[in-house]
Image 1 (cartoon, one colour):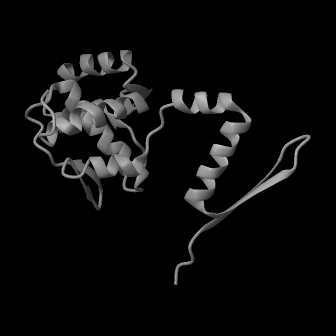
Image 2: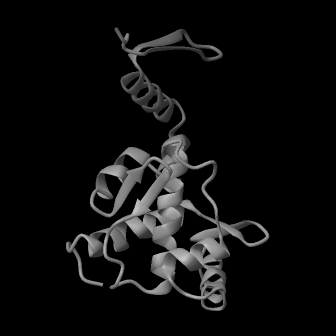
Length: 170
């Protein structure tokens, strides 16, 4: 029988009493961060300015767009409406999800892999990769390999997934 995971955080601030947070992992982490934002208001501002990827929400929003297979995450939605740049972002998002789910060893794809997935030649894909890198949507991790950044995932979740699901027009 699986035991529910519990978390305990004990915090001692100089010149103040110690505080202990104990219980469910999600509840404790939320309470701890709320406490810190009250003690250090600048942390709340920093939290609002920092974009992080919530994999659980990404998975929920991507239902019908991606499918999880034994060897990775694949795009299953019709990509006919998408530009080459958008198709690249979608492929890299799938790879990111695959890595987070333990289906892929890393979140990067080569120019050749992207070319095959998008159905365009490497000469067509290469300039799009440069454009996406300039926009900070993707980054080059080594010669000829790219991965998506948080801003790229944000673009995919707010713009591409709703279009692919018919919830928004391009």
